[in-house]
Image 1 (cartoon, one colour):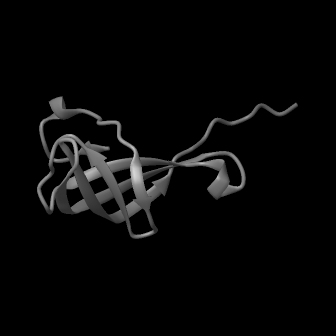
Image 2 (tube, one colour):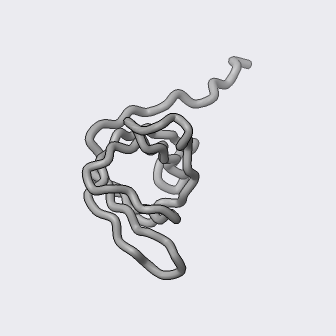
Length: 94
């Protein structure tokens, strides 16, 4: 996950999603993001979902809400506005 439209010094933040749908994603992190903030999220869909190789998807999303949860963590709900599949590693022909 990476906030967009802010200082480049923020960089990429690794997190694990707790819920993903075709319309949005919910994840946890240590800092809050303002509602309406644009974020770029790269999700890896595992083989259990794709029934093939894992697939990476880059999403442009907007934060809908942030909520304080246990142990100093913040839950973030973001609505996916656009997405595109990222190319995977190509295998050489035998």
